[in-house]
Amino acid sequence: VEPVVVPVVTTTPPPVVKPTTTTKPVTSSKNSSQKPTTTPTKVAQKEPPKKVEQTKAKEYVGSKDNQHTKPKPPTTTVQNDKVSKWLWPTKGRVIKNFSAGEQGNKGIDIAGQRGQPIVSTAAGTVVYSGNALRGYGNLIIVKHNDNYLSAYAHNDKLLVTEGQSVKSGQKIATMGSSGAKSVKLHFEIRYQGKSVNPKRYLP
Image: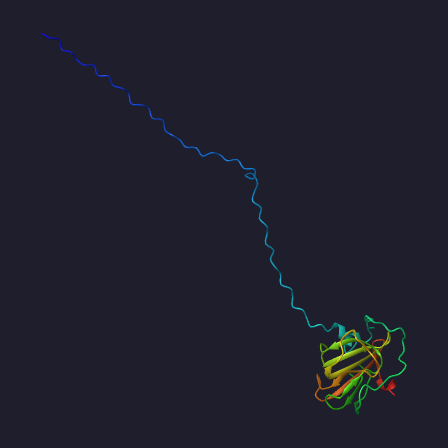
């Protein structure tokens, strides 16, 4: 009897598979510890609307609050404090005289034709040329020296600009009715900021 040979079966244990873990490389950055800087956005604030500039004219004419305010000297100053000779600013009939008091007429009103010449009553420097002062229309103010000013209101056209030197008798405007109901010139003379009767000075 032949011997029975039993084959020996050897089993190899399965290999142990280790779990693979993927690690992301840590990148070091110099700025990693710094917080991002944000620049704050400034909110643009709207400037309040500018008011119509009336201060310059009110320094010289027409405000009840500054009847005794001495005007500031202009760029060009005149050395003397007197006017040697005054001229009538235009031709025409005086339709309203000077009257004292807060509600009075601060000068004289002269009637005429639209477009007729208005001249500077004496040499000086134009310190105001515009229409910002209510009730005066197109207005010119001439400073003759540290004491005297003259004002010309209700003009049709203004022919001179601020800072301009004018001669006695020089045409500075044309007569009109701006700021008035009729064609006329409202003419004022001021001494140290106070209204005076122009007829005391005119020839």
